[in-house]
Length: 199
Length: 394
Picture 1 (tube, rainbow over the protein chains, first blue to last red):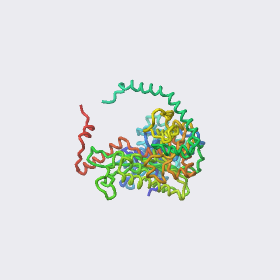
Picture 2 (picture 1 turned 180 degrees about the horizontal axis):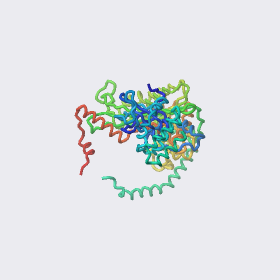
Picture 3 (picture 1 turned 90 degrees about the vertical axis):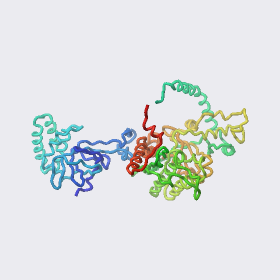
Picture 4 (picture 1 turned 90 degrees about the horizontal axis):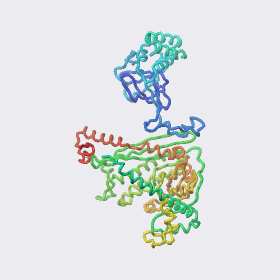
């Protein structure tokens, strides 16, 4: 049973390969690269957060600078309490697997998530279970994203390594997998490896 | 064919030339208005003369040139506001209905800031909602559409405001804000039972509910008019300047037109000169016949306010005007709202944003109605005129 406390938002846009979720709380998005999941009655779908945005809920109303006479940022929000209701944080996640029954499958689910499906940030045990195999990496490394893929891959591995029993060993194994996947693209491999060392 | 702007360029130019030519004269009239306001030392005499005037002008409660600085804000306070939009009955369609979208905004400031922004759309299609009928009478019922729908909307906005106000905690200091005027002007053109339904049992009943809430909390009520065009105070100056004891413009003996010395000046021009930023003017009593006849304890007072951006008119019911605490609360909170809202009360501006029904919303609403009719296999005739507007041809 997924805990209510890990529920972070709701799907507002979905396709076969990715979904966009709106966060329940402003700025309370799962971090870049984290493993999230959404569920309907048939399956649980897993995704990796690749982009987070915060903007006005209405495209025609842009935020304006307000803090000229305020001592700190928090004062801006407390002096204009409506701001938290007029802004929203959304995140996009690329689908990297799903669960069918008890079995984890590292390929796209047959159906995209439904609009308004709840989205949960996966907790430690679930991240450990999902990252036992690196079969999700090919989908992530090969994804066409509007953000640098190397950043997302590295962020994902850093996140997962924190839950691993031996983070260093986890990253070394992941690095080996990447070396196979990106054997003919040294620059991308180097970019990712350079970003996971900080783990 | 779209508007051919090239054909009106010349006329716009001529209009501006006339405007420029009148600038000096308007400035002189404004100066005269300022002097007249300062010179009214005998308030009692002026008020008596105003009472004898043949047409309603502002009745000053105190010296015309009084001005009050912005009172201090309470530490914790709340502002509530409502606004509304509607989709009117479309006589070119087979289904007779209208839609009201009433917004509500609550902004709490201080130790525990909070915001609630909401809107409640509702479709009115029941026979009893599409007309207002006299109690027990037949035949004189009035269709709720056009101007009457606008008045009904104002009533619904006030009802929602009273509901919001009722939820405020005991001991709180709050301001309930409406956009525009507190006077439902349009009622005079309808039979008396309309006034009874919409004003006595509607709008004024809501104001009474809000007033009663003052038992255990401080709750002021005001309406805010941005960039007002009114001349009620200038008209009072005209009365002051009139050489006749009982001013009546329709029967003015030719010759003496002293009152023309302030012609063309608006109240906002006068108070722009009399008030410093943050200050409010003297209190005035509105004199419209609908107010005198029906408003009772909610008799409408008003004052002008100099915000950082403009001169605004704030209307308040008598029970706010006569309670110094509520009057000061109104003054300070309206100024504060304007400062937070870049020149316009932020609660009203958010209430507007929540209520607004765009052209696209209107089209989507009628498309929904039409699709539902088709789904239910109900006949869906529409007028030839509406068809012709939707299918344009050459």
